[in-house]
Length: 527
Image (cartoon, rainbow, N blue to C red; front, side):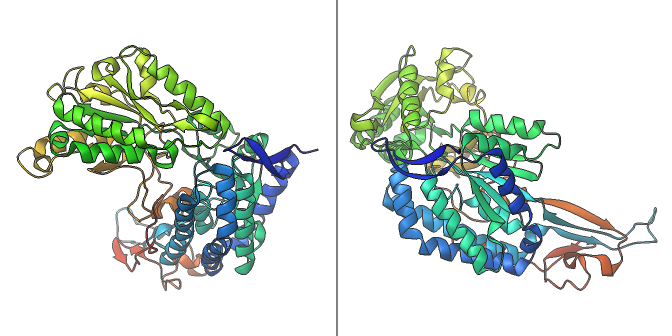
């Protein structure tokens, strides 16, 4: 008999309702095979567009129930989840536009040239769907990075059926979202099994090993993601694993910036690090602040804002335990101070706070390396540095050189450093931060990911296990592979590669670009 799957209230730790049963190996096999059988139907571009648009409609219709369930299971709050639902539906509409645009197919045609030396054959290339995609739902975004999230939307847009492994923190939300998407498939005249859902830890392992699964998308911890990544690589037929794992998201504040707007930067940092009780993958976790009066003013402003932040509930008891023990271990290190102490609050809550440490303690291997690991929750580490010692252990450069990859990296500059007499400082800092992250920000905060064609939500390992983005138009590229046809008679060519271009796709013919639309035209949503 399958083990029960319970919906749990993180505010009280009590079970709400039994949602489903954990999937057995046979159930996972059935879910994958059912999804696999829908590939031919999903190849129809018009029906795929209809599915994506119907998904947005069905999710909107189910919005009140989805938001209520998600709030009950995550304690993220109705306002936050309302915005997340808008972002989620926006992603489906955006990918519908992307399918219509066709640019993601990368059509290239090089006609035969018998006069070339050696003679050149006719070559035509485009991209085709990989097949069944496994999606592992995230804990901290029960909509936008879970069952109806960007991985699912982009995979369906690519023509790939999806099997989602639900996250145990929000199983009821997962079931409701899956039901809405399956109804959308029926609305579009497609089999409902273009999306199937499984629950359970063992199901996740069985899923990544299934021979019909061709790729996987994951958002979660380094430990869990790396285990799945290694399993995907060790299969008899390895598959791509697009994992988003962990991110420190460093921020550097120059002395000139601190002198000019210490209060503004301190308040902005407080808002960013406590947003969603510090449970955003783009939370600024390591912040370089100069020593001296300007830096002291910034830290004082940060302390004032963080001290006023209300305690919050984390997504589950395990995350709370990890947060409490993690901040305690960091605060116990020599030379680490806690101007506002993070830690446990009353009634199962956690209290936001931040730690401070001198840059020299992080410039070489040692126990303080713990401060360079992500701590999930409302805490950040402020590194006090000597603005005139970039080449020394007291400057930020020595510490930045030791950091792993992040989703984001941010610099706060003064106007004179962005186009005035000290522009060289700004350029040098951007040059130092660019190798560390997939998105580099100037005078902003990394929490909030706009869904636009230019977005890149990824970064060097351990931020992600690939060079691709999981947000924005090019997220679809993860689920496509190129195929070239050589000297193929016109009657045998797929319509995407015919000379008469019946689908009206943008393409490059003999080196000349033809046609093309805007792609991902839906308004950007933030998460």
